[in-house]
Image 1 (tube, rainbow, N blue to C red):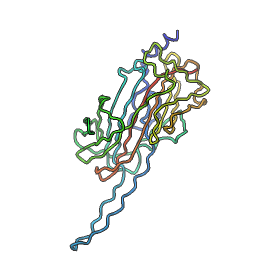
Image 2 (cartoon, rainbow, N blue to C red):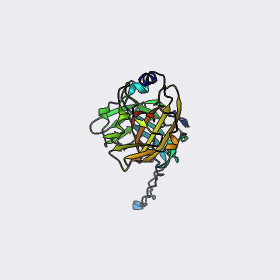
Image 3 (cartoon, helix red, strand yellow):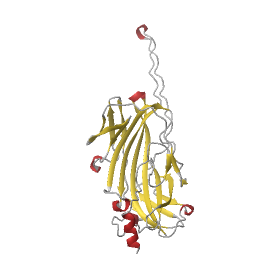
Length: 306
């Protein structure tokens, strides 16, 4: 009986890994937001000393200021694609948003470590997009690819080969307006409970998400990264979403989802999103400004309330 229910759920129209729209909204598990760590405001460089050689006017270097875009490299690995209404296990994408410099951060909506919420809201800053031609190039010493214009100030490359995403490697993004670098991250050697990673729909959803509290562990850890774990809880037949919870924490190898967020009927189906993310603020000669860079590594598994 349980097997037939799980297979029915996999064949339904439920899709639990769609991307968020560009406007701020309440994020359910059907549209998880892109995670990002809170970054500090950029610091200004010191002015250069004026030069009076040859009787020339004093010259000053213009201070670098503001954030002029968001660069995102994203990898998602789905343990059971058929259970999620997807056709492939691995997805690698790159996205670049370019705009006039702003004083806000794309990532300021992220919650503090140790915080959970059932109503995750992502606000996006107000921006004035800028164009840098039809495409941009993303290059490292072994691979390169192009991201093509998909809208005003928006460049996207989808279906990148997984082998083209080198771990812990420096990439250079080249545009007609200037360039900048970002450094990729690595994934996981193991995740527990391992039963959440079953790949066959006939025995997926085996992992027990206990109402007394649910702990996930992983390795390796990264001191410079953060984690967001999102549980989407569906009815036992997979017909509708009952609720969701997103918890944030440091990348220390373990996270507990507290029991107060797990009060759902036994055998409710659970979609488990484990996301490692890392942000940085890098200098760019695009508008003599800064670029926010975001690296995401997501694993999606399955379980049930017990």
